[in-house]
Structure formats: structure tokens, C-alpha cells
Length: 71
Image 1 (cartoon, one colour):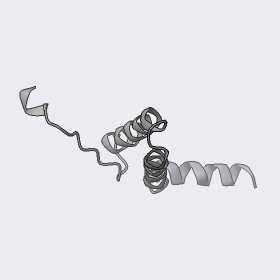
Image 2 (cartoon, rainbow, N blue to C red):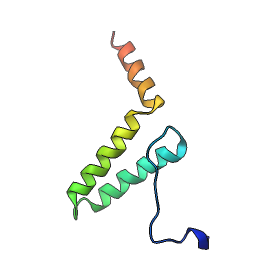
Image 3 (cartoon, rainbow, N blue to C red):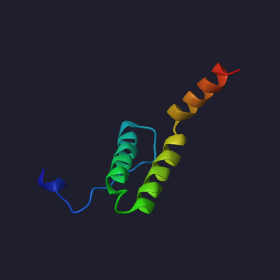
Image 4 (spheres, helix red, strand yellow):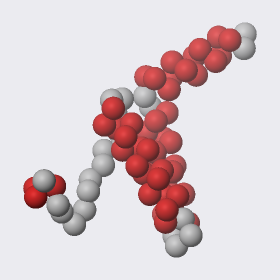
């Protein structure tokens, strides 16, 4: 555990795996926590997480399924 104790913890929101999904969730949680102090940062983090999520195959499949349902 000593190796994990750093000043910063890095997340990688890009991708379509469990780690990138967890990173996006962490970014949203962080944004919610800091929004009263820095709304601009919070909005940018949420937008970044959203953009990366929309690139995933899982998201694209859900959109395709919804489009198919509404035909």
C-alpha cells in the first residue's frame, strides 16, 4: 500500500473497460464535490466524462437499441 500513497491519483476516462468506466464515475463524483467551490471545473469534468462515455461501444449499442425501438 505504501506505493499507492501519492499526492495525486490519476484516472483514465478514455476507453471501454471497467477501469475507464470507474474513472468517469470518479470524475463525476469529484465534480459534484467541488462544484460549490469551482463550478467551471465541475462542468468541464462532467463534460469530459460524458464525451468519453459517448465514445464507448456500450453507449453506442444502447443508442442504436433505442433508435431501433422508436422506429
